[in-house]
Length: 100
Image (cartoon, rainbow, N blue to C red; front, side, top):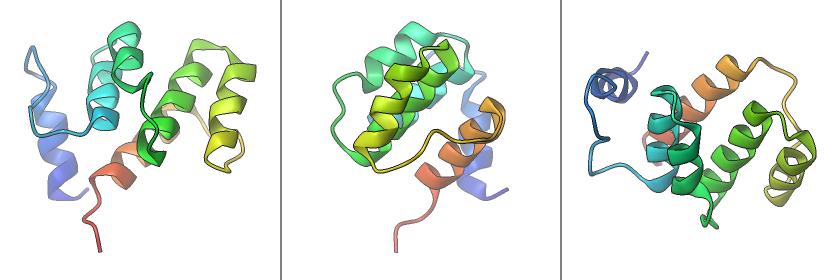
């Protein structure tokens, strides 16, 4: 696990997400804390790929697969055929990866 992921996981002991996170990462943060509504509120208006991917994941987690499929389609992705936990980890890893 890379350093940024370890730092992100450590912040989950706090009551509030770090202020330097993108909306998509704040959404994942609230999801990890078990607050779907706050997670969804963070990404509901996102138009960037990261936010849309988290939005899609949250609707998949909610069980609203048709809505999830719509959001995955917005970023030209199929609904993943992996566990929700694996998708969450993939999202976290992708969103915390250093930009090249």
